[in-house]
Image 1: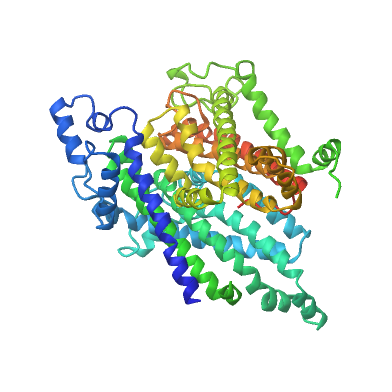
Image 2 (image 1 turned 60 degrees about the vertical axis):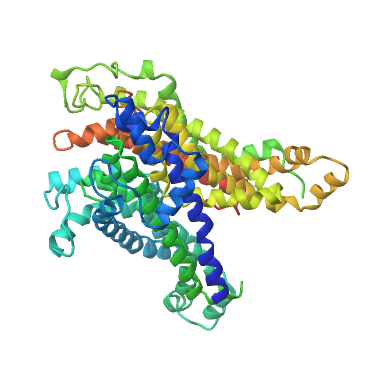
Length: 314
Length: 281
């Protein structure tokens, strides 16, 4: 198991090398002269030259890349042109809303998805199965950001039950935080709950065909005991991996949901940075979310080994 | 096992309810896009401020937006952008995926490098990578297609690679090599045909993702320029007036959902028909 863990942790290195390289190359994808684009039409040639030197864009590409790696390793992501502070500080200030939103949406997705999938999978072809899977199919296709808007219209504008947008920190005012977070978390989590439900169902179906389930039934155990005692834990193993993928999708979705609900997180940060051509911030947000994704997947892979001992001998 | 004849799998597809329902929905969108000029009741670009935010009526089937534009006509014309982006992205990712997947599955030395790069690209949340690429390239249909192709090609490449790895060492491929066929000929004659099924399935899902992602980029204001009628742009406009006029964002979103549903049904049906073992995450 230790060997597996070491290998798994080391596998992060090449992935992060590619991630950092892609983030670095973003600046070079800007059409024309990136410095002229960053400074806008009013910049003088001497300003352009000064900024070019300051950003290191006058050096050869491989040298720039090397310098970028060194900076990132030191935790230096540059300075935001507009916020006038280090990018890492700006990211840190905005990380809380995004993390909380992702986490609450994940809880929603699991709370809806896992039971629905297991119920549907436990009695394939039943009315429950059909209704739940139809709902899941629709759930996969409904765009999350559009669902958010409909939720705002229905629950905030028409019924007035919940705020249409905004944010309160859970560490300051938990009740207000819950009210603000309810609609964003449900609309973001709903899509993924549909995906989890579909996977959980197929895992359940597969597990229920195994010999040990037949044995349990032959022993005369009731359906409930077979499902809860024998099938559930085994069906959950692949579901855990899906939850890892889900978290990654949720991080991306959170960015969009924040715009709809006016939540001051990384999503609002990157969109306003794009409008101001504040590229270090754009790079920082992308780098940090990708790193979060890689980390989540690492954790999931480790959990996978803990839940399913068979994988240790792979 | 004998190869089932052409008519057989067509018949199987025609019997699959998911495929038929999915194709029907897709056909509706394609017809709307093709005959947008006829189907639309108004000029989607015409601003008519006195008629802003009118609710759905006989004159304006789906109401009007904050500039007095006819929402029905916007939705009909918006299907063109969606289909253009979806179809082109699907074709480009298939092409890129086949080239990279074949190279990786076939050339063992290339495999390691290519797959690490693909892993790295897939480590970004898809929509964030697309946003970042749009941030660098700027708004425009071409850039949306470029960004989404970069984002989704690795997924197809991985799929093609694993398909190739499954076939590469089968006896008939060895036989072809023993007969003196060259690598490229073997890839074209014996490997590629086996990738068509997975590619079709994956293609329908990527089509669906691309349409959705295009709308999200438009909604965020980093996709196609705001003056182009696209579903994402209209929904973005509707967000600002949601208190007074829910219909502005409701109907383009519905069109988006139905297109996604059609493509997902098609993909599910194709998967069940062409290869029941295939699973696309």
